[in-house]
Length: 174
Image (cartoon, rainbow, N blue to C red; front, side, top):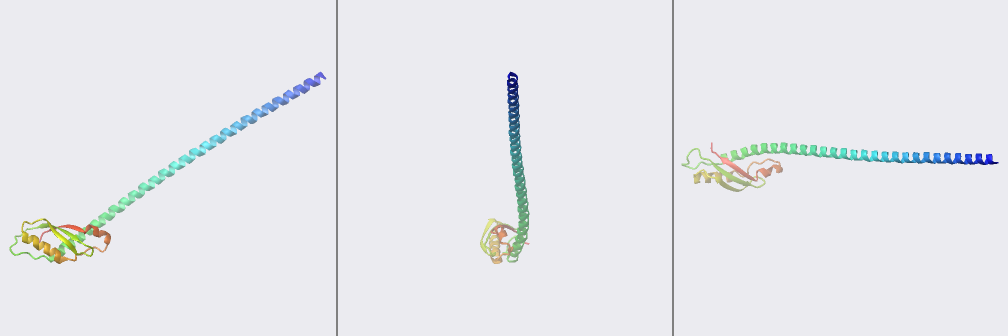
């Protein structure tokens, strides 16, 4: 009976060791799975952060490209506008020249600078001599020519009118 007891005790110890070994293996396996889950979660978080950073960089590049395009379009529009301004300023100066009457006794080679305020439609709101020719009759004749030339030729595009609201012209008779 003693042998049976010893075998039973040995069997119980063996089972206890197996159970303990199995429990340790399960604990080790559980810890490994938990660690793996942590690593997977950390990797996902890292990828999400990288994706977020990539998207932010892409959005910044798009904004910069859009700004560059807007600046380029604005520069092109300004160049077109300046071309239109130069063209219509020449038309306006020509119309003033056609309406100018040279005062008797005015010397040759005179010129003056006038500030012309226009309203939409091309009518003259005001004319002011900014730099006199030195001859009041000549200056007055230029003011009269500006008023007679109204309405001034203006481009059809109302967005360009802002350049014509106040015009500074140098009048040099031909």
